[in-house]
Length: 508
Image 1 (cartoon, one colour):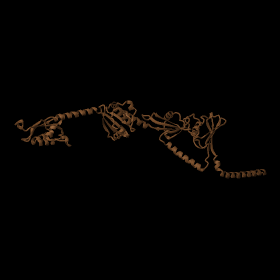
Image 2 (cartoon, helix red, strand yellow):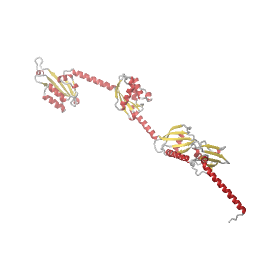
Image 3 (tube, one colour):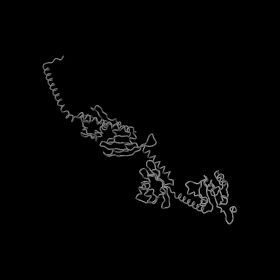
Image 4 (cartoon, rainbow, N blue to C red):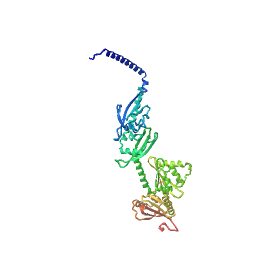
């Protein structure tokens, strides 16, 4: 038990009085502060202090220190801190030892009045990070809402299938998503090297790069894009390996087609869905006379046919005003697989032009020189006409039956004798029809029955020669003989009934 003297009691009583007045003053100040809370908080800030010596962090008052891990063994604490602060504060000194005076830097990425203060001390640098205090609950709620939105966007970017990363002004990676983290260190180094320096703020740079594939035979391809900002750059790497492979396969396929069609005599012109020439072969050059330089320039379909018209490699249109609409109609018809036309050129050549549809709106035109074929057809027709004319001049009626026992042709004399006109009939005349006409004109049941039986059974091995007709009437000499290839020839020669007192029997 402590014994208090009078003097001690006086002193203690005085202290109690002073303490009581102090408490009352603080309570009053607290109540006054309630009324001015908003104004006070507008100027309040939170701050953390960090003490560095020789680039090493030796003390701080932060609850947590989420500094990035050191990438190399010789990376200092300040370099890690610099990366941590870099996305909000630019122009940070590379080394604290380079500071010659106190420095203050404000945040350049948000509307908050955040700042960094560097204070030089005795062989040490005192760094203060100051953040404004939220003035009221509504502002706090809005801040949390914005943070939630940013977190959602961050999660979306982090889960994106394409590599995305951010770098500071020195090119150091300060953030990357999962796809970027999945890249090998070697591929990351090649990509960063290919991109080079970050573009200026507001500008962008693009580049395509191929990387060696460690698990496959073909390279990996990426389309790279960097967008500059005040704090560094944002980078994107789109994997286009499949697109490149598809383009390579398509290009090789086109080359294969070109080699395949190179030796064809048929000219080929393939127009893509944009109606530009995509493929042609040497035969097209030979048939049209168009230069390889012109065709290699990939002319449009309209330009291609206009040039053909100018070079008289296609018939001159009767109405030039409707020429383009005719070309469009031709393309539409070809797209339906229906276009085919024969062009008779002023040079005497004849081309058959065929339009064929291709997938994805493309269309191909085939140019065939059928001049020899047309000439041969014309010669054959002339020969047939000549033969028919010669046969029509004979006094003997001649008919030829096919291997299927159908009438192939007969001369004019036979038509006159039998009263038939095969060319004027819609239906083909067969063996039975021909022999029925013969029997009506020259009745002979036995002979015509024998002829029909032998021809039908293909047993006519030798000619049948006989005289047919009504007794006392006109008669005819009939000859039926086999020809090669299963053909049969029937000949009738009219016999005059009486000439100078001779009878038909005398003539035979």
